Amino acid sequence: MHMKIGVIGAGRLGICFALLLDKAGYSIVASDVREDYVKSLCEKRIDTAEPYVQELLSSSNNITFRTGNYDVINECDVLYTLVATPSCSDGSYDVSAIWRVIADIQNATTLGINVKGKAFIVGCTTNPGDCELFRKQLEPYGVEVFYNPEFIAQGSIIKDLENADMVLVGGPEGKYRSFIEEIYNKIQVKKPKICFMSTTAAELVKLAVNCFLTTKISYANMVGEVMTLAGLENEIEQVLGAIGSDTRVGNKYLKYGYGFGGPCLPRDNRSFAAYAKKLGLEYNLGKTTDDFNNEHAKFLKNYFIGKNKEKLPFYFDYISYKKGTDIFTESQQYRLCLDLLDEGYEVYIGENKSVTGQIKDYLHSKYKNSVHFITKDNEIKIDMFSVFV
Image 1 (cartoon, rainbow, N blue to C red):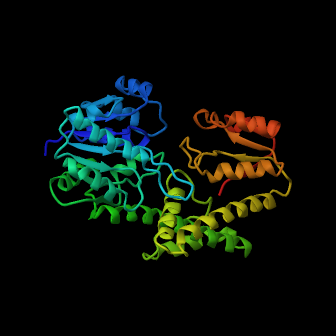
Image 2 (cartoon, one colour):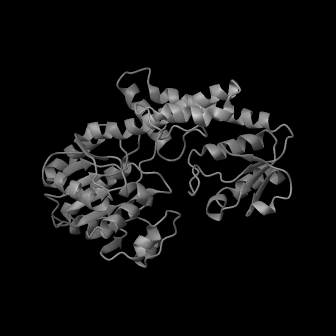
Image 3 (cartoon, rainbow, N blue to C red):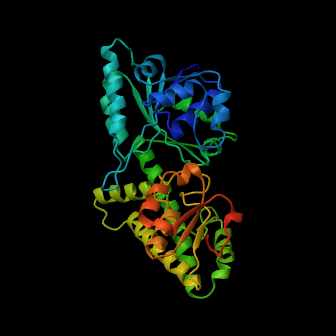
């Protein structure tokens, strides 16, 4: 099918998805509200730690960038929306940015733009039932609504998009469902496994998958804690490896270490819990694993303090939530760093300007000479206790 694709929200995920679509040979119009950012994209420049993004941008052939949505809505048949959906205090997702895009689609009709027959595809995380509300709002305008979220991790977005275990699509049968299937057959390096269902079921799957992963991570950390207290910490890797060898369990995400963190897993976990509570389910796994994750952070703090018999300064190779990223969102490494500083220990942190530049002033102002940033291992002239799990 020859359709032009719009990507509204060219942020961390949106730009990666748009560039892969361009690489696959589609014609793309992408928008973002940040004027300076869009200007740099037009010049084929981007400041990002994500692998392969600059290379794909430099070699892109058929992608244009805008600061407004009306050009995207006017020129494109398919409108992918990848805007921010922050968490609310109760754990649910704030989808007001999506509603603003919907308002733009409605307002576009008053400007003489024909939207009938277009597809509105939500790629950001939403609450179960949200896309059904979007559908009811856009149905009078002849716009079909789909839910097609991505399962990616920061620091490996391109790789994850190209190698997804599963592609999730919620929405009606027809030409656009077939077109979404075509897209993933082109951008993925292997034949994709595509799961079709209703939008609400797909919204639930997105949360439930990540909720399962937080449960699996928590289970591995629970086993590790038990073995540590039993004096068997040197065999944790072997034990979890044996458990994961059972195909009913599997080895992915079954490692002992820091608790789950980052911008996706904790939020999806709480959102699943919030949805379960909304349905009247008082006991749910999401809250249980979230509570365990907090207790595990305390366990690690006490463990490292107990192991550091000589009260040496602690050393962190990185403190972002995942090595190779510049994101601190619910970073368990950063949390441990702060916990140790609060206990009065000196801490040395590996310097990475895109990472440490975000928190250096804060740490120096609060902890003064207790925190140090170093650029190379050989700069450490004193004995250290390296923190790694």
